Image (cartoon, rainbow, N blue to C red):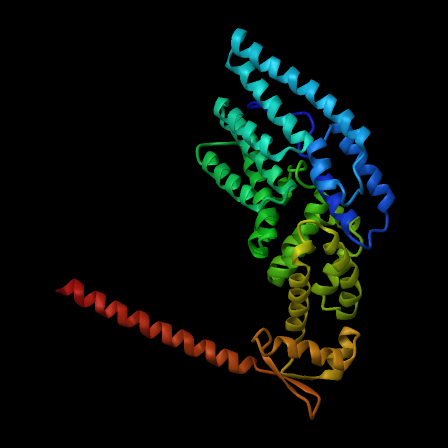
Length: 387
């Protein structure tokens, strides 16, 4: 892991963590195939620490003693060879060879799923690395380890480290990779607008396939953008984006979900909302935020619909969304008290009345108030300068 990009596989294997999340779901439809895939990856890469700590007993069941013994013997032998390589490089070769040996040791621990030893080894390798590119590769690998083990503190710390190194230089590709990494971190922190802006910025030049497939990257970009950005941005950056259009059909229901929301086809929106929620539920990054996403998207759809009316009947809105008036009544009643929706429900007449005029009046008053405060401060400053 020197100044040049690594041509081999990037560790840890983040798709394995996603498969583990899917296998932990009670409604997992392909449990046997997933279990086999996981065991194959673990066996091929000698992932003994990960197998014992994160896969057994859940979700794989009781540990296989024979498999443990096999991986332990292979790992001990491989680590001994790496240590011998480092010793030989230290005694007989130069700093470059020593650094390569230290990087090989760090990559070994990352490959087998040993988080603590991997991070410690990458720190040692970092100190021996001279070029900015090599240092950034080291740090980005630590970010991926944080993603793999869902260690948000480790992710945040190393993203900050990467920004410090990038301030010293660095090529555009690593800058773009960092935007993807930071976007995923912000997505897990529910800063969906920040994540969406980073994703959309880097989409035309996306290269961070070691952390997320492009198909899944577009899925994340669409989901967080719909939850946080305005219609103009959604049209320009998603609806009309050739990058999005090239892969959006690879995720079932995603294009229909996006188009029905943008074009205000609310019955279709509700139909495709259900399978999209299932997809979000199975995603390891979004799963903890499923209730928030569900609520935000419903609120966005209701807000978008009501913006076109000064008043509308409960029945008409229910028909538009393909649900019952009682459902719409309950839904709006959960948003109105908290101020999320600016409207009121006339239960007797069965009418929803918009409070948009009142809101505009309050905003106008607030602008006047802030303007008066600014003028007062300017007058005081002018008086102080004259003195």
